[in-house]
Length: 117
Image (cartoon, rainbow, N blue to C red; front, side, top):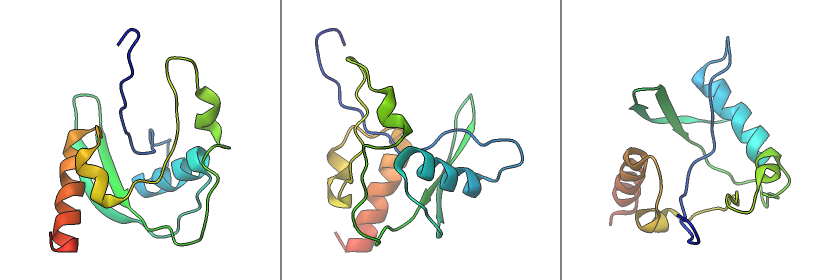
């Protein structure tokens, strides 16, 4: 939007490389994009588009603070496209412009079911 600001929230991730499982790709992308080494992944949902099958996972991070601005995606910042990784409390997901919307809906549903809302 020329002259305006549009905040879109996305989850970390990208394509699966040759010989790689979806789980291996998720772990690699989290390390490359955010510097996180993840050992446990829980299959969360699958979204099928015209271009690809996308698989999403949930993991929990309990190992302390992480520097979210020293990884490869931060280097892609330009004036009209700012990449700023942030932690988001699950209670806020419903108010975010999170894409894909199918993943947002599933996260909201999971949070409501897990928290008793």
